[in-house]
Image 1 (cartoon, rainbow, N blue to C red):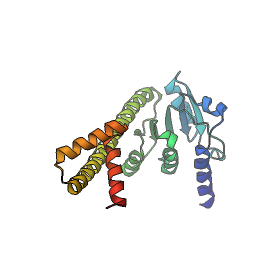
Image 2: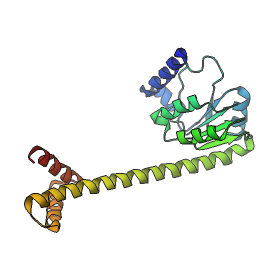
Image 3: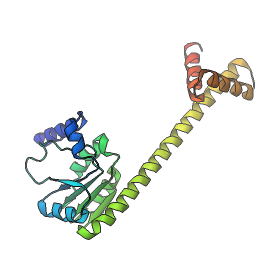
Image 4: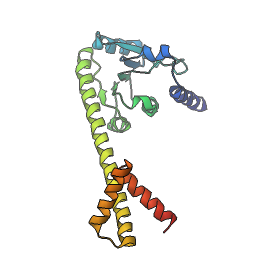
Length: 217
């Protein structure tokens, strides 16, 4: 168990290191196939046809200690008898892979495995469906789902940031109204003029006001 953790840690640490220029071009725009054996790898490769791709066989004893040239991969396809959730966790923990779709093909898998994989960020989880002719369509759907997920995530993040900004502005405005005795509109207009004059956002002005009041209550 300690040896397995050591391998996992080494793989993750290596992924965070700057890759050599020769490594970064090896995977540029290519699909990474991580298959447990050559037969599964061949099925996926045949299904991808002329799409650029490279393969790693995870069933090889030394595959984890070899440097994986993963920079620039456009998608990751993992094929194995059952869901390798430990490997998925490692891959999706690598910051550079969070922006690419990950597809999983397994011979058998439970609903729990599927749920855990999807929560990790997998774009497609296919049970007993590794047929070469189906792969292009499944890949297209996974890419669309991945793009939609990213768009929804960005939208949620923006909404959260906007809400936080409004709360900060309201707090600063309330403090200024209390301290100055000025009406809300005058305080707001004053903050807006400060933002325009200083070339800052309303949130930045509000944060500065709150910081000043924290020092001089």
